[in-house]
Amino acid sequence: MSQALAFALDEQQSDVITADTIKVFNRHLQLDALRGQALLAVDTRQHAFRCEAQCSAATIFSMSEQRPALALCTLAMLWGMFCLYQHRRQMIEGLYGGLALLDGRIVDAKGNVVKLTPMQQQLMEMFFRSPNHSLSKTEICDTLWPKKDDASETLYTLIRRLKPIIEAHSDLKIEADRGKAYELKIK
Image (cartoon, rainbow, N blue to C red; front, top):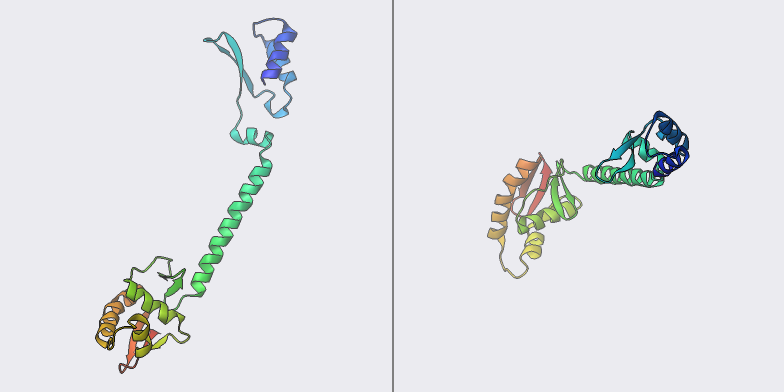
């Protein structure tokens, strides 16, 4: 636009803008979309002319060389949405009774992390990694408290405190098999 203004002022050989100057200015504009959309203004502080485009940002963007960048940005956004969709689908597929083990954390069906103590977290991971969601008492005690001779009371306390949390966030319950095993079941 500045180049078109310089050509128009040279052609008119005047520092005064007239209707003819505007016609010559529009004729020298190289972009068709700007013809009739560009304004000439006088900057009173610097005693000079300046040009401004009176068109939408979309028009300016379409005239620029940003289309490849826009295409890459759009592809990146679509890829991101696809990855989120796949992540969500995998999480939903991994749900068992409304809970899932996702990235080492127990999450509910909405993707919210269920707040558990470290021992509760370890026990829930063991339940989810077990093929039938069942664990023997000795298996749990040996894994969680390997140096403790009799961890029955500690296990009982852990299960007692974990049950209400699991039941509040899912359709699961922990059932005991006469103190020999524990199973994570759907209610």
